[in-house]
Each structure stands twice: as structure tokens, then as C-alpha cells.
Image (cartoon, rainbow over all chains, first blue to last red):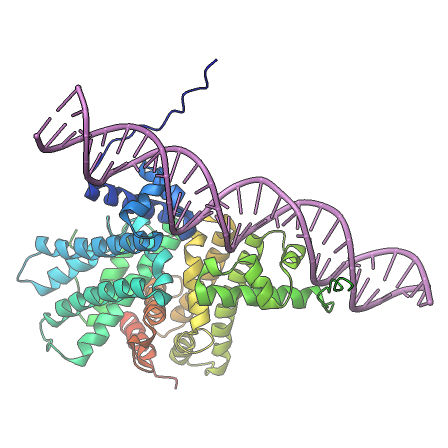
Length: 213
Length: 213
DNA sequence: ACAACAATTATACAACCGGATAACAGCTGT
DNA sequence: ACAGCTGTTATCCGGTTGTATAATTGTTGT
């Protein structure tokens, strides 16, 4: 009786871009489901449909894959928020601000996966220089856009110190509502977070924001 | 030449309470310094001045120690905020609310350790039922106190739906400022976070909050 | 003093981690 | 058809993790 032929797993060759995207997506999913500790090289490879060794063929280390995943989530978040501005009336600053706020409270930004990854990696960005760079760039880019929207409101003087303070406050309010929504998903009614955000931002800025629904 | 006597580490017997407290404190420190992954049983034991086996003598598993550490941080946070109310004028609702907000932006609440642990464990509370229970109890307890302070303001009707919404918004604003402060420690001037929080909460509630400094 | 009890240490273990390396196999060009 | 390139798998490795269990020792009661 011959020894059973050592069957080797069949596979398809794929382009570099597709494989990197798959690995990043698998990493994001796993972090969202079980935290950073669930995203092991073996689990990521299995989720992406490859074997663990391939990770180190496309990324010099697991940390580099981690940074790529974090960057992907953060950039995707800001990008979809910015894209939502295209839908708003270009000449109405208040409507544009409303659209900006609203984009934060519907998919893909208000998404369990996005929020979980954001929370899971938040701590890492304190110590890891690479992660910190990603965080600072994304956070400040986001807040600067918010500040520009605020400065464009009627009765505002661009460059005033109050714009910075108001941008910090509005950003914090949005962040906090995100977190509460992520930590207690069923603790809020449908659309409640957006409603609270719109009235809260309006109160901070001293105006009434229309609901862009 | 006789074999060197196998020296066994000397030790002192301690009460259960002291040892549990030491282990919890060590766990918190390590999480704050290097995230949840740095808090291994061996590192915790070394920090607490004992050997790893002792952890499982006082906690049925490492997860139970983890939950105890999370509960300790969360309860300590709300407790110190609540205690700060004792210093405020009892009859002035606005001053009491100011004191409540201000307590969130000075030690021991606005503390790198506290904030780091809070952020590190936030994700765990999504999936781990035990951690979730701790989170819900602490978060809702905190928000309910805030809502009670808001309801006591002049011109407010206790039990109104608006109180809940305003409490959610104020809580989110405070949470968000916490996080921004934790993720970018040197991104804000001295006292800037508190100042933004006071004016933001005041704007949301439609009143002017005195700085309790 | 001495015995009994429990707090603490010491050791062992299976599972898993990230990384390194070598063998294999699916494409592509000719 | 076939040879070469490289994407991909397979296997191995040292170190670490959480946990289980046994041996030891500090303490306390008598």
C-alpha cells in the first residue's frame, strides 16, 4: 500500500494589489471581531484564504500589515466623510456642515467594524511611532476640514482662535457619540445619535443645523 | 564541592485583600504602559512582587483579574468625580455641574494611566459579557448622575426627554475630549480641554457655566 | 516546641506566537 | 512543449502565553 500522496493545497496566483487588499481586509475584520489579539498571522492568513507565510511575502513584518490596516480604516473613514460633501449644496455652509456631521453617523463610518478597529488601535497610536504618525495625520486632517467648514459659516472670521476651539469641541462631541454607539450598540434609538449630534453641534456653534435626511 | 543549595525565594505572607489589590494595580500599570498585550501573567506577577502562580490562587483565571482591573479603574473614575461634588456649593446647580465637569479634566481622572486603561479595555467590553456588564453599569451610572445634575438646573423639568438627550451629548463631549487628550497628550494647551468642555456643555445646555478654578 | 494549615514558590506542559527557510507549482513567454 | 520566474505552500524554530500541579515555607494555635 503506497503512502498517501502528500497532497499540497492548490492555489491561484493573484496580483500583488489583490493579495495585499485581502490581507488588510482580513486583519480589519479580525480586529473588529476579537480585538487586536485576535489578529494573529495564522488567523489573518486563514481569513484571507492563504497560508501564513504569504503575509511575510507582502509585508516585511506583521507590524507593517497592522499599520496598513489602521491606515486603511482611518483613510476610508475621512474619505467617505469628505465625499459626502459633494452631495450638499455648494453654496450653503450650514447644509455642508450638516452633511459632514451626518456622514459620521451612517455607514460606512458608523459601522461596527470601523468603530471597533478605531477603538482597538487607539492605544497603540500612543506608543508606536508609525501608528502615531497615521493617527496624527488623519485626526488633524479631519479636524482641519471641520474647522474650515466652521470658518465658512456666516458671521465667522476665518483664522480666529474661536474656530479652533469650536472645531475641537465639535470633533470631541462626534467622537464621543461614536464611542458610545460602539460600546453600547443597542443603547440608542434609530437616528438618535445623529439627532443629538446635529443639535449639539448647532448649540456649540450658535446656530440651527438642518437635518439633511 | 557541594552543589549550591537550591535557594528558594523568601516571601512574606500577606492578607488576601492586599495581594488582590497589588495584582490589580500591577495589571493596570502594565496596561497603561504597553496596552493589554503587555499585561501577561508573568509581567503582572513581577510588578506585584510575587510569582506567577499566585495570580491563579487569588483569581480563577487571568480574565477574572482583567475584569477586576477594569472594574477598579471605572469605579475609581466615577467615584472621584462624584466626590468632587462635595466641594461645590450645594445649593447652586450650575456650580455643581461645573465641578462635575471640571473633575473629569484633572487627576486622577484625566490621568494618562486612567485614560490608557479605559481606551485599552473599551473594545473588550463589546464582546466579553463580563466586561460589558462592568461597562454598562459604570457608564449608565455616570450618565445618570450627569442627567440628574442637568435636571436640577433652573428652568428644567425633571424626567423630560430633553434631559436624556442633553446628558448623552454632554457625556459624549467629555468622552471625546478625554480621548483627544489621551491620544495627543501634547496637542492641547494647559487647561484648554477643561475650558472647551465648560463652554461646550454650557452651549449645549443653553447657559453659562462658571469656571470653578 | 511542635503540628497543622494555607500562602507562596517552583516546575512542567500544551498551545500558540511571529519569523525564517526551503521546496513546490502555477503562470508566462517563447 | 518546455524552461524560468516567482507567487505560494510547507515545515521548522525559539520564545512566550495561560494554566495545572506538586513541593516548600511562613504563620498561627496550642
